[in-house]
Length: 126
Length: 418
Ligand SMILES: [Fe+2]
Image 1 (cartoon, rainbow over the protein chains, first blue to last red):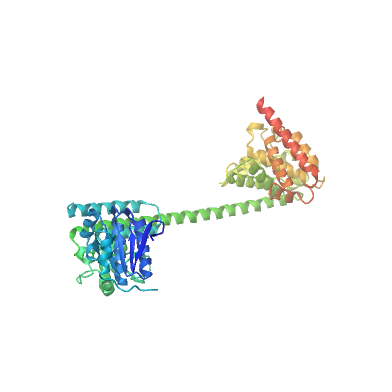
Image 2 (cartoon, rainbow over the protein chains, first blue to last red):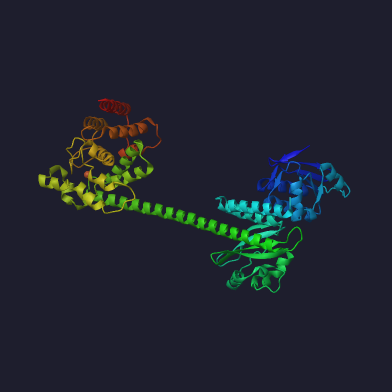
């Protein structure tokens, strides 16, 4: 079941993978909520993150900075991270800025989960 | 879209957001944090920090991202290092450049490299280093280009000015707060001085000790009941304290023998309102019209008062209030030559003299304030305390006051109708 946290961020878990849904405009307010949710999921034992951008139309500079922060935290935890359903304009932005060097892009959530299942590890239970 | 166009749009959006953030009046630390994110996100830099220079002390971390909480904690920047930053060129701000002329970089290179910092830029405002912005490498892994440097330096300049402006505004707000406190202190000192004066006036007249203080308090109560602002209420309280200050220059024997003074001495005593005005007028009081209230507290509505024989509209409202408070206290306190009058008697006097000696609006307001205490509508028992135990007791007191208020109101209505 989806869990809305902090009023805006929806998320749910598939095994040891957390799927977090980004909102339509990724700025400071929404970005920080997503970051908090990702941190929460990682601290709960998730070994992989999927951030779903299907509803996201625009990502601004602050959004980029916060996404890099999430990538950083995931790397430090040894967790894998996939961005799914990113629109063309945002894919171009991520490529231009080099975010795609650190994350895998997937067409949709299903493909993201499939991609991660190849690296499935045993979930850590706290 | 061409990557260069996309980059331009992305950078331009960040600059616009940064301008808006810096011009905002929001929380300071939030402003710095957002500005830092905007800078990092423009070029996709993975970590960064904004450090402020503090006079004689270590750098203060204003915002940090992707670095340990204790990053550069306790690190100071000295005058020589600041000068080197002021003179530095772009190449000098690169951590990897070991030929750099900035001593700060040479001193802390190990830690900076360990934490992934690649660039340290000074924030410069009006030719002074006000802080440093430390930046990690690009997520793309590419080197910083000339364009990147231009963008970074423009944004750092913006952030530097933003921080400086916010700090200045903080200082101004702090000064304003200090001034306000100082002003409050001055007002308190002024009030204490005035009360001391009032006591000095009353000491001169041995039979009316505490009179000025009571007149101050009654005046304050009446003015508040009449809907005056707090500032005006404070002012009239002061006027009440000082209304008889002119007596300081009247012979003590005349003041103390009011029951058998001759015409000459009477005119000497009647000089005290004008004398009071002369004493008070040159003083810059924090409230308006205090000298005038002292000058006219013995005027009557019918023009038979002194010193100027003013009539109704010509008498300032404050003087009318002080006048009633003064007479009320005279009637309700014992004098050497007579006992104080009963409350019934006092109410009769007020009724008879309303419109002649006293303004009926002022009398009605005072009666309402007393009635509120008598009926318990107000918890405040100030008038009761001033009058002493038992004076306002008895069921007839409320009736007397109620009748007085009704009569004064109907007279007032009849007058305004005609
Ligand atoms: Fe007087």
